[in-house]
Length: 167
Image 1 (cartoon, one colour):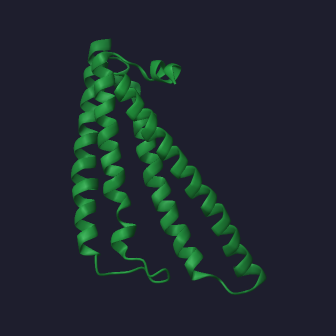
Image 2 (cartoon, helix red, strand yellow; image 1 turned 135 degrees about the horizontal axis):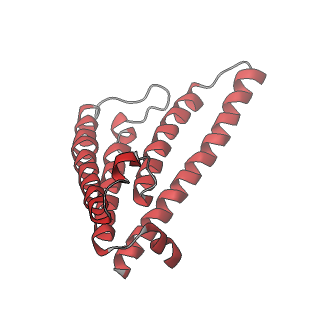
């Protein structure tokens, strides 16, 4: 269990750091875009494209991080009426469904779209679209890993609060 906790902690650190770096870069790029657009009257298409792709990458990485923390939105009005055992089963079922969705749509679909866009490149940056789309299967894989870790925690009875206290 200690190894699984360390794996989760490492992934959490990498994801939160990546999101912070991307967000900081977005602030700098956004500021540059504002300056070039309103002061120099020459908008930068490169910064526009960078902001768009950076935002997408940050959103997908942050969503994987949120799934790992099990802080995603849920409607508990029906689940809260179940017994503790029923809630545990429902939570495990929810994690399995998330894992199936992330695996089929994000990993399989992401790899498929990467293959389809292999020959295309972005308009301003000239980066292959395949590189841009790598974030989809990557975040899908992270969600699957987190779902497995969450299922193990649910089965063994480790709650999120207990994991956070150990950190």
